[in-house]
Structure formats: C-alpha cells, structure tokens
Amino acid sequence: METEVPDSGAHAAVAAAPGARVLVIDDSNTIRRSAEIFLRQGGHEVLLAEDGFDALAKVNDHAPELIFCDILMPRLDGYQTCAIIKRNPRFAHVPVIMLSSKDGLFDKARGRMVGSEEYLTKPFTKEQLLRAVDSFRPAAAA
Image 1 (cartoon, one colour):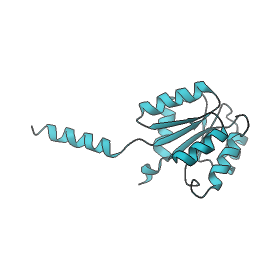
Image 2 (cartoon, rainbow, N blue to C red; image 1 turned 180 degrees about the horizontal axis):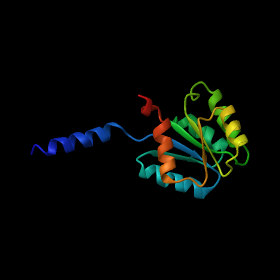
Image 3 (cartoon, helix red, strand yellow; image 1 turned 45 degrees about the vertical axis):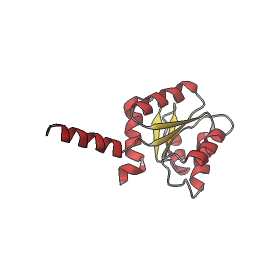
Image 4 (tube, rainbow, N blue to C red; image 1 turned 90 degrees about the vertical axis):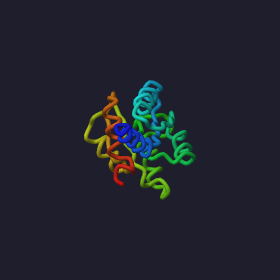
C-alpha cells in the first residue's frame, strides 16, 4: 500500500498543472492540424484560426495563454495581427510566436518590432512546438 501513495501524489501534481490554452493562426490547414495534434499530445487546449480576423475574434472570446501566428496570410498578415493583439492592454502580455517558412534576419527583426517573443521556422517539429509552449506560457514563470 505504501508504494501507491507516491504514485497518487504524482498524478495529483500532473492534474494540478493543466495544459495551456494555445491559439494557432495559419492559413494552411495542414500546418493548423499538425500543430493541433502536437499540442494536444502535449496536453494543451488548442484553438485554431485560419487568418488574422478569425484570430482576433478568438483571442477576444477565449483569451489564449499563448499564440502561434503565421506571417504570410491573406487579408491580415501575421505582423499586423500580432501588432493589434499587443496594442490591446487586455492581451499585451500574451506571448506571440511567429511562424514562417522564411528564416531571414529581417523577418525575425520585424516580428520583434511588432511584439512577438519568438520565431519558429516551418516545418516545425513536435518538440520545437512543445518547447516553445513550455518556455513562454505564463505558468512556467510562476
């Protein structure tokens, strides 16, 4: 019986640290679904948006703890979407990680200028995505 106590304590510790609520914004269905699968496997709640306008509504309605945002999207690109989110005092603290198939210095610098915390190059791995969540979710700092 005594050996079961540490096990139940370990389960309680896992249950006490629920996954993050993560929003993935990308116009590619393939990227959205890949990110969703990887993040759900990591125990996170996942919200999906296919463009910047869809994303802004979801940010307002669901208050994600972390946002992955593609740069090249129709209507409202990732830089514009990030800038709008960061200008809203209610969401300015939410980390935004830019996603792009480009790995240029200019793209990374422009992402920083609009307030993004990090930059991931596509295609990303499950490990890269989960590491980013662990690094930037607010609970990690607490």
